[in-house]
Length: 84
Image 1 (tube, rainbow, N blue to C red):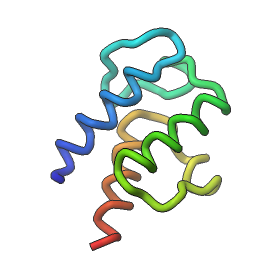
Image 2: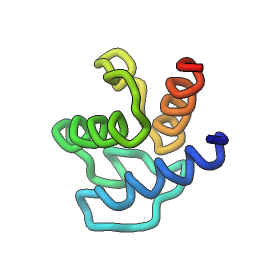
Image 3: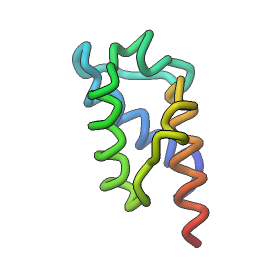
């Protein structure tokens, strides 16, 4: 999967799960401040991303640096490329 495809899929998932209601999200949207995710919603999002992209569990150290949708997409792309 290309980086663009990863970003598109991550944006779709984040938008569908948005606590403020389903919406289109941009790469620069901030997960908590702009989209209304709280810590529990972020954990739920991580679980969905792990299942969707067949990732190893996202640990707390990785999750703490995730501020924007692009940060999430970059992490998913990194984790999927590390498998190969």
